[in-house]
Length: 457
Image (cartoon, rainbow, N blue to C red; front, side, top):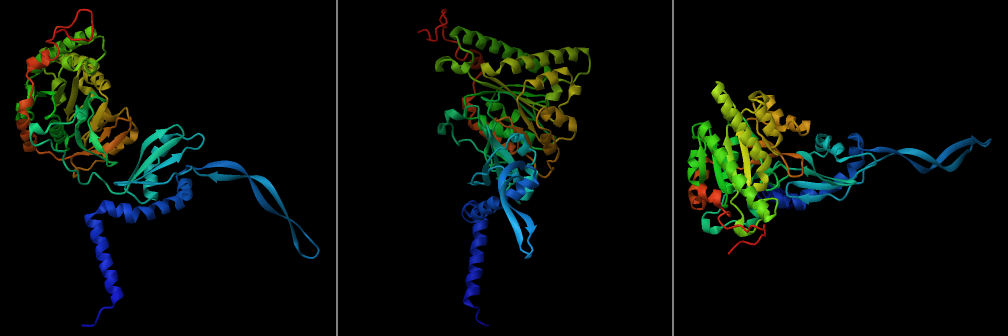
């Protein structure tokens, strides 16, 4: 066997090391090896990319030019050198690219007449020009816009966020009503922040990941001192496995109506407590007087609005009115809605349309009909509808969601099986408050008649 030259052996060894590095440590491989070359190329090619994407502006500048003059008898060309104003293409100023875990971020200075939406509309063009997975606008301030290039799709593999193994492990106070349920396309954690966006609508077809999101939400909220209330008009088959962690579960429309009446009564008592303390919401109450937050999980919201006869029509009207009242007033008093359904359309009645207007959080998985996507995302960017309709069936859990910054993002919830969610419900059943505790939490103290925020002894 002939001896292999040493340079070839070294080259082969280096190639193996690079492939192993890329396979087993992609983050460090990106930061140390790929990003420096990418940053240089981005800066070098920016003028051509900006011109191709329509981001340049014509500006007149003084330019030192050489203008041909007369030809002398000797054949020598006499030239005139002078300043003159010429129109040149000016590109937006590009800041230094900054690496992040799944790509990079760049801040641009907007030219006169430009707005951040001008960049949001050409994200696909920038992604193709930069040879990357996607580009999204992630921030803006007066005269500036920040975009993020996504080099590797973080939604391909999402690890589920699991709760502490034991109740004794505790939870962080800053995470109250802010469970992490998955990952955004920017690589950031996807939090369903009920403190910031109090009510959410979760739409999706069968096997689209809608139920998985509910499982992830239950796993995230199970360790927290929160009352979970369930409406399951499938006879309880969806939410009954988590009954140990649910304060109440309604499986018929009549039970839902009774429970809604009780929630409205609780909300009225909390209104009275806030008024006596002179505050606007329960989060301004003293710790000892603050009631337990309530999260109402509704599975198949369409079943609440379907009618077969006149008697059911009256029940539907009462249900819609009660849900609308909670959606309008519940945020300040710690009552939050999470509505899920396969089919959410205007044909269900005016109650659904009015309720939708009060819900700021939107999650749209793959849907079977365009009207559900329009009902869920219709008041957002039209590109959000296109993104929602293009979710493939082989990617369950992927959805288009609203962000706290008012923009929309693609996101994916981490896979949480029913058994994992059931185990979390069983583990943290000890922290489940009773309905009497929900109705009387913080209100059992004698409130001073003068409205002072000090508790009576």
